[in-house]
Image: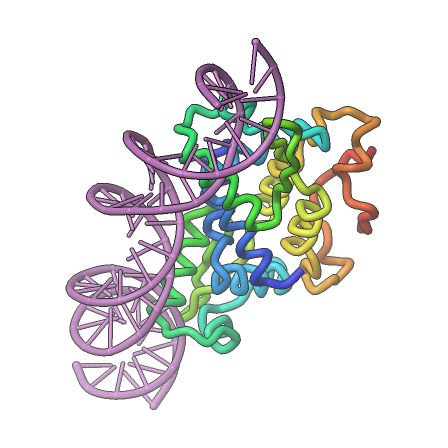
Length: 110
Length: 110
DNA sequence: TTTCTATTTCTATTATTCTAGAAACATGCA
DNA sequence: TGCATGTTTCTAGAATAATAGAAATAGAAA
């Protein structure tokens, strides 16, 4: 992942409204949510919601597919993990002794 | 971590120049870097660099301490991990069957 | 106490992003 | 065809962020 793409994704998430939307999609998982379903959860005029969804899509964080009349939005999990990886990689210059300062205390794996 | 703080941190990182600075600090580890050392690596007028460092500090991502004449900037790793945790938590609503879609392929631990 | 280096604050300008009403477009169904 | 529902595009004003020169402050050292 290149810095310009990471910055674009972080910038997209750096807005409370969009972060809220994105988290709804992360929790929803690969099944995704329709624009209408998101609209019911976030209080926002349609045009504004559409604008923010477009930002998230443009940043590569969210993908869309049409299901009949409605558009289903889905978080792109590969991209999410790439972003998280970008943020934390080479922490402490990969010095093992230093690592405890960088790494999370514990991480529950699947 | 509250959404408003996460959004502030993400927004601070959502600028190519600041992300570059932040990554330098993450790689540098707890020892940190002086403003001058950062200035040498990022091509940016002093006033601009100072502005961006203040943004990172304000977002809680970076802390400062004085060492004589110079100010040493350090990434706040606890905050970094909290942010990463915020972004990924409750992925797929914690459905175990769904988890492979959410979680990174592999993660090298310490 | 003058001077040097390191860094910030002040200030103003320019650039970008956000917001949301109104109109348009897409799909499904009677 | 005509109408309902879902969603986007257009538009333009309001709000916020970025940039960087110049002046100011902080500490060290002569």
